[in-house]
Structures are given as C-alpha cells and as structure tokens.
Image 1 (cartoon, rainbow, N blue to C red):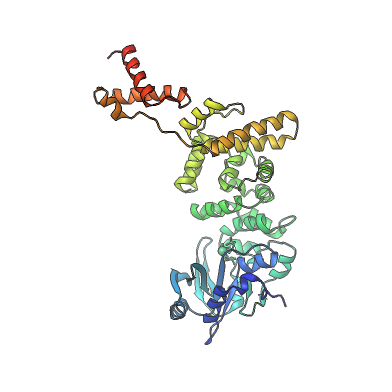
Image 2: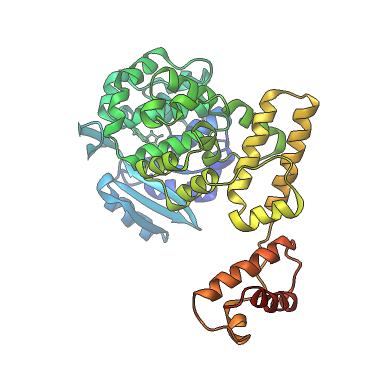
Length: 420
Ligand code: ATP
Ligand code: MG
C-alpha cells in the first residue's frame, strides 16, 4: 500500500486539524489531486485540496464549530475554503457529472469515491490520501506517476468532449510532469478536437496557457502542441514566428538565474508587433498589467547591445525599463542559442550590463515644474508644456546633471532665443 503518512506536509498540524473534524460522525475526507501527486513525485507540495463525502453546508458547520474560518468559495460546486491560522484548504464535496457540454459541467454530490475520481481529468490527478495517509487509486494513477505518464482517465476523446479545456491541461501537465512522448491516445484525441478550443471562454484558455508557459521547461509540450495543431488554435501568432527561441531562453534563465516569466516566454514566440500583440491580449482577455507588459516590449525602441551610459539612461527615462529588460533578456537568449564564440560572449556581457543598469534604475525627477515657469513670469497656457519639454530635453542631454538653478537660467536663455 502506498502511503504519504510520513510526509511532513501530511503531518502538518493544520491539515490534520481539518481532516480530524471532517473524519468523524459518518463523514470522510481525503487529500486529493496536486498535493498527493506532487508528494509521490518528490515535488514540493504547495496548495492542499480536500475531498469529502459531507455536503458543503455540513462542512461549513463543522468548521465553524471547530473554531476555524470557512469561506463559501463555490457552494453550488460544493467548495468551501477552510482557513486555519491563515492557511487555506479547499474542501470539495464528492461529485459526479450529470451533464457536460464541452464547456461547463452540471454536477451532483455523491459519497462515491470512485465516481468522484472518474470525473477528474488525468490519472495522476485523481489520487486520494485518506486520514491515515494511505493512497487510494481508482483509475491507474499510481503506475502513471511511476512512469511520469500523462493520461486521461477513461477514453481520451470522450473526456475531451466533456470539457475541451482538458486538451490544454493535457499539455500543461505534460510540461510539468511528463517524460518522453505524450500518451499517443491522448495526443491523437487532442489533435482531433483542437478546433473546439474556440468554444472555451478566453479566460480559461489564457489561464491554462499561462500556467503552461510557467513550467520549468515548456519546450517539449509546446513542440507537441504544435505537432498536434493545438498551438496555432490558441496562439496563431506563433505560426510564422515559431517556438524555436524557447530552448535558448530556458538555458539563459538557468545560466543567469532569472525567474521564469510566462510573459517573456510568450514574447519569445510571437512577433514583436504592437498591433498583433494588442489584438492577442484582447482576444485572450489578458489582465491590464499583462497587456501593458506586451505593449512596453513591442513599442520599445531598438535596443542595441552597445548602448550605455547617458544614452542608455535617456532611453530608460523616456521609455521605461520594463520593455528594455525584456528586450535585453531576449537578446541574451538569442546569443546563448548561437554558441560560445567570443563575439557572442561579449554581446551577452553587454546585454547583461544593460540589464543590470535597468534593474537598478530609479527614474530621476525633473527638477523644474510648471509652477516654476509661472513664478518666473511665464503666462499660463500651452507654452508652459512646450517649454518644460525643451528644458527636460536639455536636462536629459546633461545626463540629469543640470539642477534647478541651471535649468531656470537656461529658461531665460530659451526665452531670449525665441521671443514670443
Ligand atoms: P496545481 O494546482 O498544482 O496546478 P492541481 O492538480 O491542483 O494542480 P487544479 O487545476 O488546481 O490542478 O485542479 C484540482 C483538481 O481538480 C485536479 O487535480 C483535477 O483532479 C481536477 N480538475 C481540475 N480541472 C479539471 C477539469 N477541467 N476536468 C476534470 N478535472 C479537473
Ligand atoms: Mg490546485
């Protein structure tokens, strides 16, 4: 019998407290999904999902009675979030599907563990650890964990028809936990149903895609998505551009210790065209911040590896650093992919120095404001803005060295040069 009884996450006092109040008086609760999967794969366990035979109202009642906080996260789906000393546990009542249409499921509560397992997507995601830590497997998840096989529960094509998002989940979980080639039946079923991805809400598609792009190394998954025709369904922008920049980006991330960024990975596989990227952000209903990241990147002026000193600081002042950071990183990745000859190495060093300057950059404050011009006798009006911007040009030109007095002196000179 496989067991997680001795794992530190399982022995955690807070988890045990939740399990204890649910595992009595005819109720049963088990840890399910990601926590059990990761634990058995030797990967750190982050969030904890619990499945229970108890209906959600009863879960909430027992939790409150036990002195913990319960949040009705999704009562109609059967989910109550239990918060113990600030740590959330999602507790969901066992369910079975009564109707599906590829996008939503109508569920009913059950006390049948096998039925609950069979409505889940992948075998590795349907393992349950009971109150003693013993692992229950109804769908062949344990051998698939052993061999790092990502496999649909039951017949792949049927499971995909119930919820087309599972196409993307197949590749996402392959990116994180899969080895070798994807399961052929699953891959074939994903390829066959790819045109149905358009029926899903943009939010679900993007959320799943973002997770896929956050994997330590999503390259093989992206490659298989391309082979299956799935990638162009969700990211047609990648079609002509390709995903070939990913391996060297991953290598650069590792070599230089960069935190993997899904938006940078995305930028690496789509053309840097502001119009297309804006349409893509719109289509996928990205957040405002995500859209801005792409725009800062696409609209950034050409970033030459040799630019430094005052010129570089002028660039940062006028255009910000976010786009420069992305461009420098992609520049480095590109050179990493070309090999270790001297010219590439010096290019990498140059981009790294740009990166360092960008990351330490603090935007200086223009020392003169509109009020100063009015105080100096200039009438309010559009001329104020024009003059300020000319003074600002001089200030930037001076590498931000000119102070208030000098700029005001320059103002007198500006006035003389251009009367009226
Ligand atoms: P992680 O949270 O680490 O990304 P996870 O396995 O917890 O991984 P979630 O997306 O949080 O993944 O889903 C929790 C569980 O719910 C999954 O393990 C799976 O059993 C089930 N599940 C989630 N989405 C679906 C789906 N679309 N179809 C079937 N089952 C699903
Ligand atoms: Mg989860």
